[in-house]
Amino acid sequence: MKTPVTKPAAIAASTALLLLPLTGCGSAEAGSGSTVTVTVGYQSKTINTVTAGTLLRSLGAFEKQLDALGDGTTYKVDWQDYATGAPITAQMTAGKIDIGSMGDFPLLINAARGKQLGEPTHLVSVTGYNLRGGLNTIVTAPGSELASIEDLDGKKVSTSVGSAADGTLVRALQRAGIDPDKGIEKLNQQPAVGASALAAGSADALSQFVAWPGLLAYQGKAKALYDGAQLDLPTFHGVTAREDFAKKRPAVLEAFLKAQAEATAYLGAHPVAAAEKVAGATGLPAEVVYLYNGAHGIATFDPAVKPRLVEALKKDVSVLKAAKLTGDVDVDAFVDDRYVKKALGPSYAKQLAATPPPAASEVWPKGADETRSFDTPAALLAYVARHKDGIRAAYVPDATTGTLWFADRAVWVADGPNLLPFVAPATARAYVGSHGGARVVTYADALGRAS
Image 1 (spheres, helix red, strand yellow):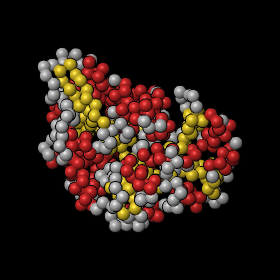
Image 2: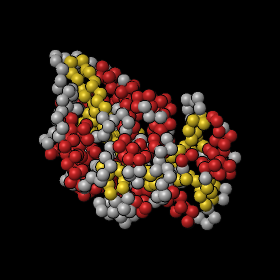
Image 3: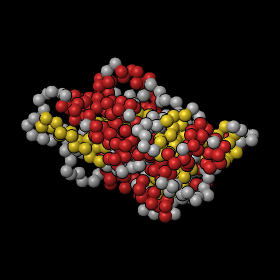
C-alpha cells in the first residue's frame, strides 16, 4: 500500500480483520475422550515474545509441563504463528485460541474486543519489555537527509495503526509540535510492506516494532532517525488468555506460565544459543535477534507483571482512543497476575522487584558461542580494531538512553578521550551542543581513535 490511509479507513480495516471468518483452529474445548488440544497464538518474528512463543516452542517446555500434570488427560499443543496481534485477538474472541502473546497496544485492543464481544481476556504475564520505550524505532532510508523527528513534518511515514510503534510515532510527533493526524501522511501498512515502501521511496520514514528497525539497519537498508527510548515511557509484550479458558483449565494455564519461566531462564543463561534457536526458527539473522534479546539487549525478559508496566498500559489507552481504535479500557480489570504468581511461587516477589541489568558493550566474535563484554564503548572499539576480521557483531549502548545498537550503525561522538555512541543523529547533536569541544565522527574515525 503506497497511499495514505485515512483514520476511518484504518479503523474499518482493523475492525474487518478482527471479524474475519474463523476456521480450522483448535481449542481446549476440542478433542474427544481424554485428549485436549490447547491452542497458542504467537508471533514468531516479534522476537520479544519468544519466551511465550518461538523459543518456548523450540524447547518443548510447555508440552513437558503438560505431561507432568498427571491428570489422566492427553494434551496436544496447536501452535499458530501470526504476523501481528490483531488476528490472534480475532481468534481468541471467537474462542479459537486459548493463549496469545502480543505487544502493549494490541493487548489493549485485545482487552477491548474481548469485553465488547462478551469473550473477556486477561493479561496474565509479561515477556520482553524496555522501561524507556527502546523496543520501537523510527528509521529512514540510508541516504535520506532527514535528521530529526521535526523533519517528518509533511512527510509520508509508514507504520501499523494500533501498534506500539504507531504509539511511539504519535507521541514523538506530539513532543515535536507536529499534529500526528494532519502533520504527516500516515501509511497504515504491515511491517514488511512498510519496509518495501521505504526502500522504494514511497515512504520517507518507517516507525516499527522489534525486530524490523534492527533488521533493516543491520542489512544496510535503513538508519535510525528516532530512538523510542527518548520518550522514556515503558513498552512491553505480554501474554493474554481467555477468561473462560483460565477458569476451566487453570492448571493448564499455570503449566504454560511455568514453561514460560523455564524459557526465560534458558534465555538468560544461554543468550547466544537462544538467539541461534530463534534465528533458525524465524529466518532472522541471529545478530539481529541478539541485539534485542541478548544479555544486554534492548529487551529485558521477566514474566512478572510489574506495576510500572501496568501504569504505562493505562497511559496507552488515550492514544488508542484518540485514533478511535478503542473506547475506555479498564486496565485493572484486564490485568490478572494470579496465575503467574501461583506458577512462579516464592520467586514471584523477587522477579517483581528485579530491574534490568546495566547497559554494556558487547562483541560477538566469529565462531564463538558466547560474547565478550567491555566496560566502555572505547574499549570495545579498541578490541574491534585489533580483530577486524574476527567480529560477527559488535553492540554498544546509546550514551543517553542505553538502547543497544550495532556499533557500525551508531552515530559516534568524540569528546576528548571519550568515544560515545548514539542510536539517532538528533541525540548525538544534542550531546555535542551541550559539551564544548565534542564533535560527531565517523565509525572509521572512532575505530582509529580507539586503536
